[in-house]
Each structure stands twice: as C-alpha cells, then as structure tokens.
Image 1 (tube, helix red, strand yellow):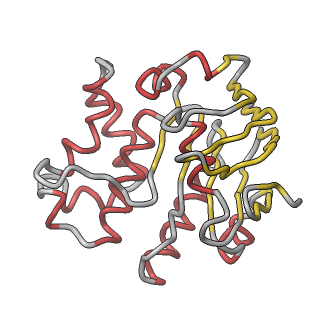
Image 2 (tube, helix red, strand yellow):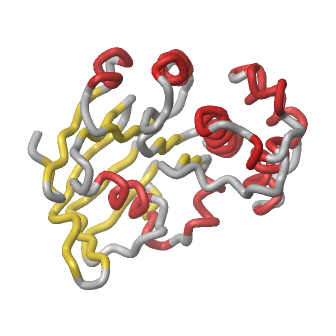
Length: 211
C-alpha cells in the first residue's frame, strides 16, 4: 500500500502541491492538466523532490527516511515522462542500469522476464537508445522501470507524445500490468486511456486533490 499523508511540496519557494493525501492499493491514475502538479507528485514519491511537510509510506516504510537510489530495495520502479534514457548506451544497458546501480543479481532472468512482457524490444535490444523513435524509447523506459519495480510502478504520462497505435499497445501492456501482484500509479492529462484501463481515477487541479 502506498500512503501519501498531507504532503506539501514547493519548487524554488513556489508551492506546487498542497495537503495531498491519497491511499493507493490498486491500479490508480492521477488525472490533471499540464501544470496541475502530477509530475511533482511522482517525483516527490521518488524522493527526487523534498517535501515541505507530510510523509509518504510504502508497505509501512516511511520513504522520507530514504533517498531515491534506496527505493529500488522496496521494488519501486519509475518511468519519467521524458524517458531519461542514456543516449550512447544500448537498449539492453539502459534496461539493466537500475540493477547495476543497486548491485542486484540474476540480471539475465530479470531481463528475460521483462522481454517476455514486451517482446518487441528484442528487435532493437542492442541498438543505442538515441537511434530509437520516441515511442520505442517509451517501451524501453517502461522495461527499465519494470526490471526493478516488482511491487510498485510509477509511470509518468506514459501516453504523452506517442502515436495512437503505440498508445494502444501501451494500454495493452498496462492492462496486463494490472493483472500482476503490484501497485501501478500512472499520470495522464485526461482520462481517455485511464477509463480503458479501468483505473481508479484521482483528479488533481492546481496542486490539490479535487476528487
């Protein structure tokens, strides 16, 4: 269970999130327009941004006590909106990077698990990531999140900026994620795909939960 307890978050002394409280124990989508605070919320969960107040718990662990790199030990994976792949590393290397950084073992079995879920990545597994289309990079970013995110996946704007055909494929993959024993939190600017996925919808407006 992910519990967000009365958090406030500011960036450069500008309040972005105000008194956010959510309990997430199943597939959930945070819906809000650009600038509503969705990415700030996800980055706060990932400890990339510091909280002004409040706390965030995952499976009874207070995440305030940990830094970003430590969250992998809880099985938390993160797919940023802008993908953040390292251009001159191969696709395989980008996917495995979280395991290397955290000295995880069984990288071959972990990679096979992810590739069986997203088999189309096998075609460009050894290509440098800068050679990929934006949509292909989204798939790789999802795979990278999955390789470490066995308990919680945070997918920030997974459908943003991709062609309709790939968006449909991402919907298929995310629906399949919903069948696994993990919690998935996605963000989206509207509920177009979240309704298809049958996610629990939480609306965010001007840094506050409105429903």
